[in-house]
Image (cartoon, rainbow, N blue to C red; front, top):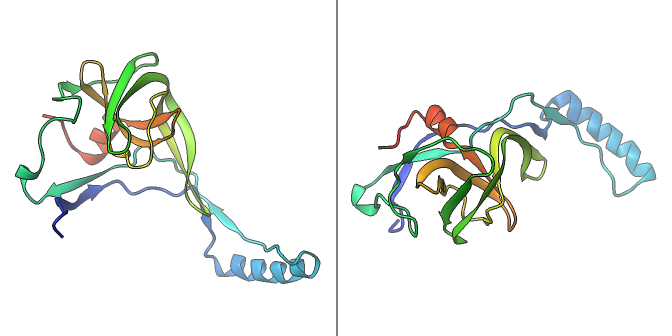
Length: 181
């Protein structure tokens, strides 16, 4: 494990919005319905899903470092963090991600609610998210998002060539019980 720098210390569990039902009654009805359906349509089957009413506001975790000597207190291509701030539409933001490096953009909306497909048959709702036109790609998740004054405003958790979605840093600080010093 030469590439390990720490271990999981704390995280906020995700609340699923929709998942395949594990109810024995629903499974029996689905099996019976699928058998009947296959008489007419051979390549179809019935499934039941369970819906949850809750939404998530963060997707985050903390690691306990094996040694403080393994990390530095600055962000590649950005530098030192100068504090924490709230964000507003129209403000410029930046991040340094593992895949796309240094990118920047403008905040398009705050307080956004959206559904993310985590894997097949599993969707999760997130509320109070920030959307920016800053590009990002898989591998950039977990990057801190900063304003032009190098204050942390969020944590990147989803994106594409055209948009990046991040959790507000105030929600991260509250849910994980941390502070930036």
